[in-house]
Image (cartoon, rainbow, N blue to C red; front, side, top):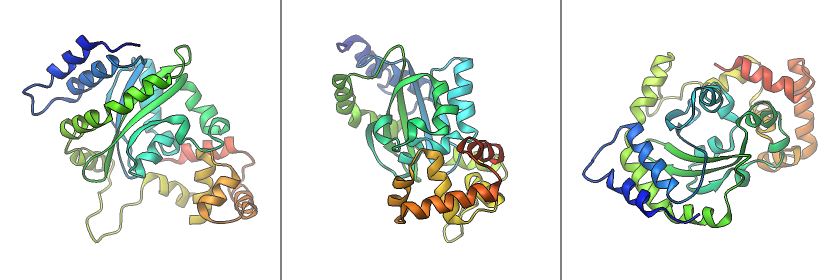
Amino acid sequence: MSTDLEALFGAFNATIGKPAMADVEFGDTLRQMMGSLVRFDYVVVFAYRGKERPIDLYNTFDTQEHVVFVTLYQAGPYLLDPFYHTARERREGVLRMRELAPDRFYSSEYYRTYYVQTGLAEEIGFFVNADDDITIVLSLMRREETGVFPPREFETLKKARPLVASMVRHYWAGLAPRFDAQLAKRGKRRRKRGQSEHISPADAVWGDLNLTSREASIVELVLQGHSSESIGLKLNISTGTVKVHRRNVYRKLGISSQTQLLSLYLSNFG
């Protein structure tokens, strides 16, 4: 599509003289800016810090869509999301979901039971590192009926990245207190320097299920969509060792499939 200059300049004009903007106001400005450059169906902006529940800063979903894309996502599936893991790695740029997904992602139980509900053909994220170990991800999404982003539009988004990153860092600065308040509401504390970090809900699941740290690492990668070969490479162990650990975990948990593993994981998530 051609650039809508009127919409683009209108988005820039909305920021003139404003040292700060509310979430919705700035989110609408970003949506207008991105919409002047490329076609998409949804926008959502999440802030991530460690393994904590992501904070929904802005989205364009209706009530029903919000349940799938936000409410269910924050309830646990975010821990298996390639975007979440990329944010935790503090990697920046404009990245396609399919470039970040593990080798078995599209055949994983997570994809079949959760991600397929989104009905997306493609998702592209602007990954922006902010202060206090926080990464903000602006996601542009296209439904299956719309199709994937053409290469030309993807290149346009990459050219817009420096400006988008600067604006995001400015208008969504100082998010740490929001994460702290979220932890306090759930009865947890953010670690202080020199102290051990609180046990995250994700880690608590594996502890409650009596898995070793190695077993927990392997089944997390399984649920994310990594093959035994991919897990072996990431953990520097043989494929055979991965399979032995996986069988031991299934036996310990009394399950026989990845479907049961995911169900058990999400049902025990705090």
